[in-house]
Image (cartoon, rainbow, N blue to C red; front, side, top):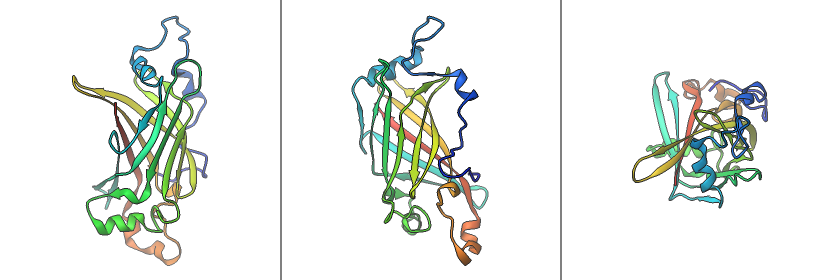
Length: 211
């Protein structure tokens, strides 16, 4: 990830980008009503959808040594999604236990939970809170506040629907700057440690909710 602006600045810039989208549930000025691609989410949102480890998963990936990709998951994820669709504001809350990170290598997992990376002992929960759901012709955008290690920034989930004859899911993706949140940013002489030099900055995070 590329270093971002100061905490709270976020990587997405509101304004002109919002001109092509509308709040989910808003009346279409063309008179066509809701985009059919969004109707299903409004219907589901009439009652809050509770997120638990049984129906939601969070995966991440980051480049290492320039070409290799390290992948991991968070096993303890909870929250709610509520999109009333009647003019009331939407609410999306996702809480991730920082110490539930798993990459398949226990030593690396301990490093990620440690004070230089996620610092799970002092900041046990990674939180995303969104109060707006915007619909584009091709996807649903959920801007919100993401807090990692006590640093809060504005990020935007890009969400799409996936389905088969037997299941349907909502998948959200976002790319974060780990350095902007102070993750894996050592101090003092540790900044010269080659371990940190070879870690990429862009972290891609994917959230999948089975409905």
